[in-house]
Length: 446
Ligand code: PLP
Image 1: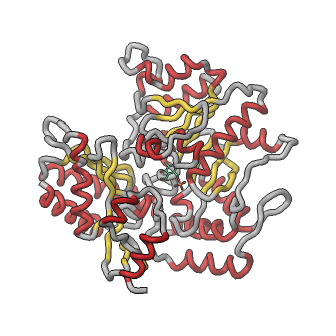
Image 2: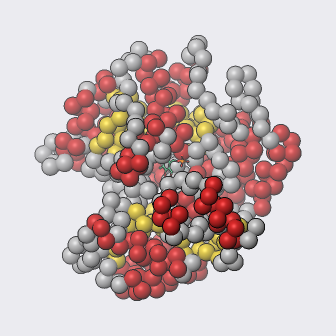
Image 3: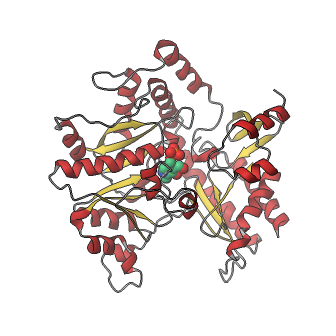
């Protein structure tokens, strides 16, 4: 079990998700995580890393919370797994469904469980089409997603994902998914004089015909695309547009949910209630594999009135252990007022990022909503000039951070965005520690 043997076995037998296999075979040595506490993750080779991305934006309450392990243990020793198919249920799944209904916005009062975000989005697409078919509008099948979106990698969700990297790997997709330009509020409000009008959601609906559109899906804050916070009024405009055309609005809260943005769900920032909400990641802070789709009363009614078989479900839909872990996770988020804390820490992080902008000529466009933050590494912060695409400047800085045992991620169409999304429990002192590493890494990079 020494680290070198593990690395060799890893290379030989373990196909890693979203990775660069050849590079890893040639020179990469995977970092083998062994334990963690709070914002820190320890590796097999005895190092302690600052987890600036909550692993994959999901370890919201931080690493090493024993209460979640206890919740899993207690459930596993009672009944680790039970089916939720026709006629069966289990206590944690029921209690979590009730809890989710009570914390979700508006009339999002029922959940369909999955094991993760991609399954949640595929489920939402199928439910949208099912809903319209039941309403005698079977032609309403098309899904509109946004450019630069990330919605997962199962074939349905991946079709909605617009980041080219994922389509370069595997071309296949489902029919009837369209993409529109993101965050152009004026167009969605109907301004046909705007130069972007033709690529807006509104123009797409007009072109295709509202009677062919089932749903619009978007991440309230685009995450993997590069952390883009929508301008004021945008979410409201899309909600109104969907209402105007009888189109379902699906909010993908897979990253944004469970406190990440300083509200339990990010749509609360804009007072918008979607018709469906995809959830995963922070629901269990990554301690167990769980996701779901919250649906509103109208959709739930249609489901409940369906006299056929709702032939959609996963073996692990409503997994009792995963649900028990999620219940404990939400209890901790609430009891420790972690969501409120996140909103407080946003101010601290933003202030520190502004200081980096002042100090470093290559840092620009820092932004944060809760603990979902980013800044850009540009050629000239004053003029806004970007580096050429092949420079991938954020990768350089992220590598320098990694050398200093801080984990961050390079994103964005030009690979010039650095995403920061630490566990929500982060303290002021830990923010300062993280920023000082970034500061050093920037100095070392240029
Ligand atoms: N939706 C969003 C917004 C995501 O960020 C992700 C994952 O990063 C997904 C969906 C897919 O979730 P999963 O990887 O759990 O399938």
